[in-house]
Length: 276
Figure 1 (cartoon, rainbow, N blue to C red):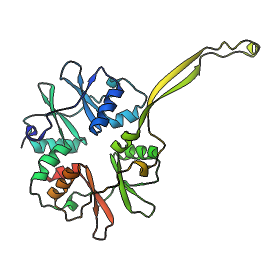
Figure 2: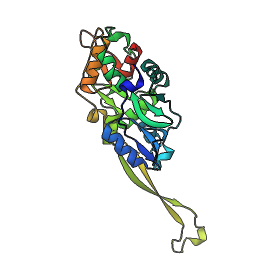
Figure 3: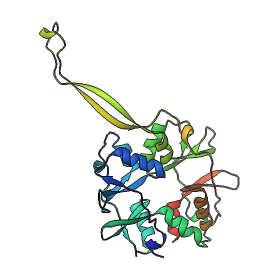
Figure 4: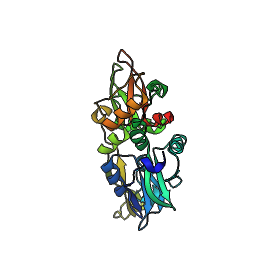
């Protein structure tokens, strides 16, 4: 199979020059964490803008300053196995597909899992691809702390446990994006000061009003935004069956439970690429 056999041909993108609001609107609309950026009036790829970058530079409004320009790409005729390997080694979820430098499609982890692995008869058990060491978060954790945990760990989704250690949900970056807002904040900066002898005079200090628009995470708890309806598998679930469940429920990861129902690990869709 080649990249062109499974890629997404109808690509949503934002253009430069542009602003952060346009990228945020599209990220929310299609429920993703990264989108391509092209030069206005052409299909020439500039790079990718990610949700993580928007949070890192929360007060930057110019889209051009938020673009990751050094992104890996593939061609239409590249082998699917090579694209899967590039996704794994580059630790990204999307690869722009180029033809003569222009964007003609995008191939994602989801494309390969849904359109290839789910259609194969791969019987290897999910335990071969399970991550036994995962970053979990308590459902009473402030959402702002969860964002920092995601950033430090590199995980987009955090299994969520209650006070008894039971798995009660999963929280991912798109859950957080849905409740985050761009807020306007004004600050006064004093440019010059008065001397003691001027204390009786009218207030004639020079001030500059600085207005910033920042992407703000609300004062909520993880339990307020987490996904509570879980789709789980066991150690013995075949790889293709795990992929089929991800496709059916439109999810990117599934917790692995023991025979006693204890949470023992997680399988992410990107982990399944190693089955190729």
